Amino acid sequence: MAKKSLFDLYNMKKQGEKIAWLTSYDFPTAQFAEAAGLDMILVGDSLGMCVYGYNGTVPVTMDQCIQHCQAVRRGAPNTFVVGDMPFLSYQTTDADAVYNAGRFLKEADVDAVKLEGGVRVADRIRAISDAGIVAVGHIGLTPQSSGLLGGHKAQGRTADAAKLTVEDAVAVEKAGAKLILVEAVPPEVTAYITKILTIPVLSIGAGLPCDGQLLIVSDLIGQFQAFTPKFVKKYANVAEVVTNAMKEYVKDVKGSKFPADEHTYKMVAGEEEKFLKLMNGK
Ligand code: KIV
Image (tube, rainbow, N blue to C red; front, side):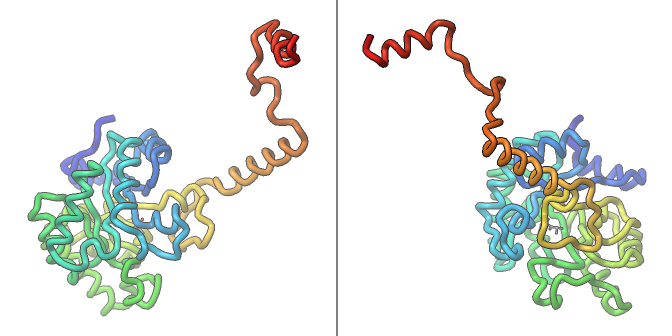
């Protein structure tokens, strides 16, 4: 299938076709995602938790994000890939934001970059967009600044908080973002945002009434063990499948059942005798 362009994603919004978006962090998973028909892949800084075992996303570096984007691009050459800007890659100055966003394009051939925040990062979004780079906004629960939000909590649950979330969404669109992700807000707020914005609105934990959904692949396949957010639907239990396979392997090794004949290279016929003679010096 041909790679979706931004234009295709806008057409999907117009025609009411939902956009299916999933994170991936490595080459094989990106191959699976492309084969499964995902419209978009996010190489999220959630790789900090899902791949490296950090407690959160804050320690993730630009170089780690670039390397994972490169692997994903090799696995999914025909999918719209979004690189996630890690903590401190854009918060400092407009110049840092443009430089680091540009690195994603130059070094990893991504189609867009995502950055967290609404009103407070509008200038950064504008700078990145003015540099000709497709920026994706991310509002609601923004994990890089979860300290400010009092932890990993749903946002926009009161009328006043919902108004702030809407103001963030409007600021992101006005600043030039071409797509927006809304995380962990009630569907009533998502529906309102989707009605007033012209750009496609994607949800992770923000309900159904919008233009598409994002999930974290490690949650979807049941690989990430530390915790499961309310909004996750597990479609498989890879942790169980893999652990059971490893247990079987341990059993086979201990019981001398692996490797079996079919896993073993054979000597050329008649060569074993010659070999033993050679070693015995006869
Ligand atoms: O890094 C990521 O996967 C994300 C999601 C939490 C939305 O930004």
